[in-house]
Structure formats: C-alpha cells, structure tokens
Image (tube, rainbow, N blue to C red; front, side):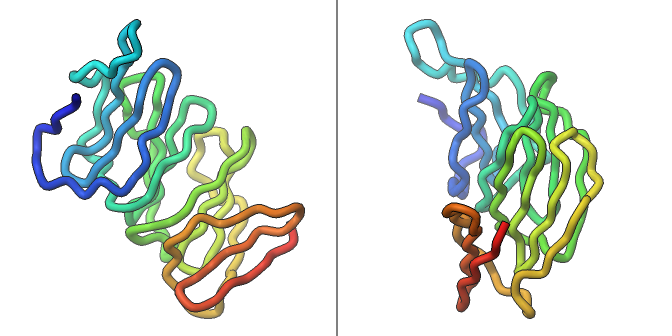
Length: 163
C-alpha cells in the first residue's frame, strides 16, 4: 500500500504505467514514479518525484519517455531522469482540465474550446491551433475518435471534426 506524505489529496488523475513502474500524480503530493517488485507489488517508496507537477483533474500521456500534462500549464517531464521538468507553457486554452491524445509523432491537447497540436519531440512549440467552439466551453470528458472523426463534447455542445 502506498501512503502519501500529505493527506487530503484530490485523486482524479488515472495512474499511468511506464516501463516497470506506475506514475501517480495528485494535487498535494505531485508526481511520483513507483517501481513494481518481482512479485508484482508496488514498492512504497518512489524512485523519482516532481513536487511541482500537481494536477487536479487531468491524466497525463506518455510519449517517447516524456510525460505531457495539463494543470493551468502544459508541462513536459523527462521520465528517463528524476521526472525533471523540460518545459511548461501557459495558454488561454488551458485550465484545471484538458484531455490529451497522442501518437508517436504528435500530442493533441483538447482545452477550453480549442485544440493545441505539438510534435512529440519534447519541444514546446505549438504547430497548430484550432478553435472548436466559439466560446470558452469547459471540457470535462475525453474526446472520442471514430473512423475519421474526432468528437469533442463541451459543457453544452458536441462537435464532430473530420481529421
């Protein structure tokens, strides 16, 4: 059993498997990478941590040994080291929650009515931005990909985009 150092965490983000480990992120205890023992039990002491990354609701996505995460900022952590932060950017499309979808080549962030596209090469350069809704609608659900359409549900609207 893993007992966090600080109590009262808001545990919305889903833990993510990485190599032989489990990446856990919470608002009070930051990001922690735990390893599994040979018998499949998670060791109680993390092998790496980043106290600065403290998400409230978003689950991160791992691409090419990097963790992309949203909590007011879009952040990128290096998983090969000690969860060192490579960069963080602020954007008006980002808030407490944003969904992230990724391939080996690209990272798509679905924020407040806007899509942000980055190359998955560890740089912080946005390569495209697309407004989905005219207004800043909160997005609390993950987009759905069906065939060549991406469905995005805002607080009061649903759109289907051809991709």
